[in-house]
Length: 261
Image (cartoon, rainbow, N blue to C red):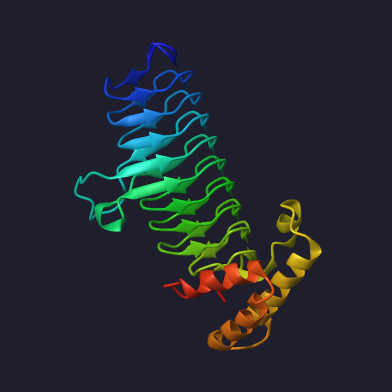
């Protein structure tokens, strides 16, 4: 702890492992079995409970509550954990729960994500890299989020749902089914697909040919009028010439919940 800057009013459990260059703000509590990686800053009035393993260069703002017990009546105090990667930004009053014993045991968040104010990530969620969750976005338990996903403000995601890479969920949408990669969902009561996230794909370097293939896949899945089995056959044909369509088809094949259609 000799190279960490810990405010005099902070309470840090002796068993916590604090990396080099870590800064911990006033009145923050760091519990037992917590590991905070090098270069991380933790603001004032935060709570970090263990078991939690946190990577390097994270930025945690005031009043965030990280690694708390899962909000699950079946949780009976079994050992579970939160694993947080590198370079994440977690803003004010965000809450992230540990996993549950019967849900895999681990809540996991990758690298380079932005979780803005009042975001909630529930137990056993699996979040990828480079995601942005806007204010008040909420994940119920066991949700899986791919890379480069954007959740707009006040989005709610039902338990056990999956959202594929590069998807965009519009403000206030409630997601109660799996959202395939690349799809844009708009708020109309419960969220409904409304095209592909073309602008986001362009920003991430997808060229016109790749985007055109994804648009053809979207039309087959959502606009052709085909039943799901028929649409999957069309996607299989399209996937022969497109790795992106192949990824979309593989996402659908792995699904256990209904697809958002």
